[in-house]
Length: 433
Image 1 (spheres, rainbow, N blue to C red):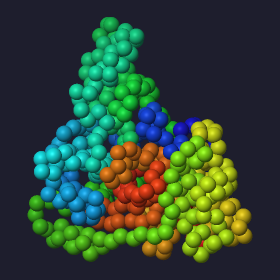
Image 2: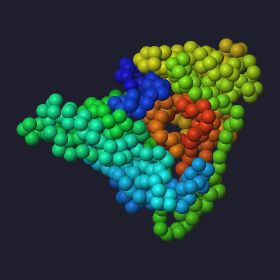
Image 3: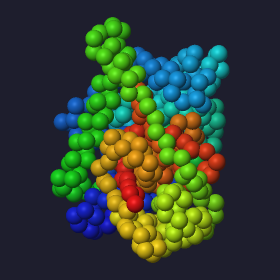
Image 4: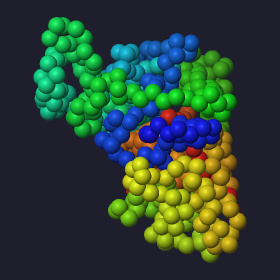
């Protein structure tokens, strides 16, 4: 993410909508661009924050609870109904504080996936759920990593003293190597990306500090997220309590009564398949506009290539500063321009502070929308985090946790579920003809 000298809402947009500035990139591409806000796990480590370490036993109970609930809620995870979980790994932050616990899920004794639980109350309780494997899961598969670090250390005249697994938020798995110089004085730590086994910048320079604008809007964004995280922890703690208190019984009854789902049928599935289709923001928008072309607005084009070309042009999608760049404040303008081209009213508007209730109301009203994520996580059952990415939201599922149903521009065959909060920040673009 670049440091741009703009003021007011533009500064805010860079914070909440970097997803459109660094479009549709892979884990390797983002290995040096995570944790943009000078934070750990997406939350400020300000000493005044009320952040506590979570006991492994509590984290295990939360993992069990969510594995069982997912088995009931998501058909693809029905085999997890009788699963067991086991703590297999602890990740740390750059200050050597526990950041996340990995729990392997086993069905009939066989590996079936993992659940990643936050080790602090500064992040959402459930960070990832997938049937895949973590990068670097097999410690025996690290000879190339060790060689890379040893070569780096040798070139710098350093000696490796110890290593630890490091988690810096979704997508960001590293191994940190502590080093000393020839005089035994501690040198800067070195990080190795577990996705690529490549040495990246030293640990301190990996965390890019960005100035946070003095804005009431930014404060509201941070306060809303902090309140949402606290509410999630309160819910999980009540549910894993041993006693059937009135509070726990009431919460269970409430969850059961409000379990629901919504889905907008008829939204096309478009995939980025070549350089012609660079730009996740216009591609996600193409699916949303394509839906309206067959649902009351036949003047709009419906073909993927036509929609993408027109939207990318209208949004100003370009190759600067990266291939497929779309500036976030141009997404709604681009959609409106295309509607206007066909003599239709302008229906799109960006929303920088959407809440879960907004997601539900849009889908219940039959309106798919564009979701733009900053450092988005892994979809349920997926194997790669979304990073900075735009998707089309076509539905939702509510249970102990909430999930959005998405068309992700990476797959033109299936929809995917993504847990609410699986991102550092988001912006939505509502489309309401």
